[in-house]
Amino acid sequence: MTTTVTGKGQVTIPKAVRELLGIVPGSEVDFRRAADGSIVLTRADRQQPASRFQKLRGHAGKGLDTDAIMALTRDEA
Image 1 (cartoon, one colour):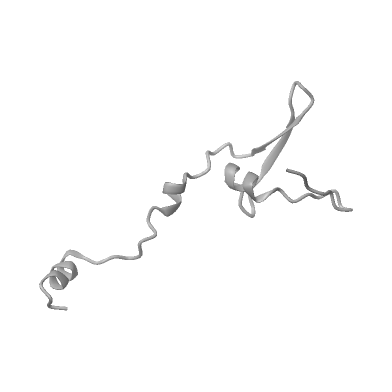
Image 2: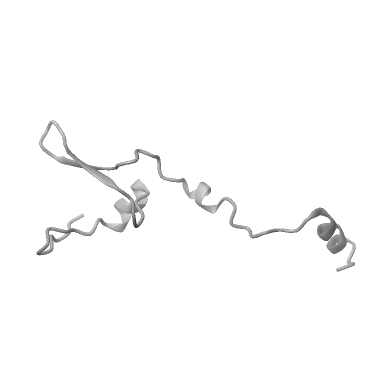
């Protein structure tokens, strides 16, 4: 993946890399030089990004309580 450096020395981190590392607006990142001279980008907080299943967890909405579910199954709603 290639990106261009702006006049201010800024680059855009490709979307695939942001998603892989879990980088979102406001995330802090570290740059370090590896032994072979390459530069390595990591998340500063060292947390593992959420898996695709963790991202979906808890997104079903408020839900129904037991009485509401029973009313629906009995056609009382």
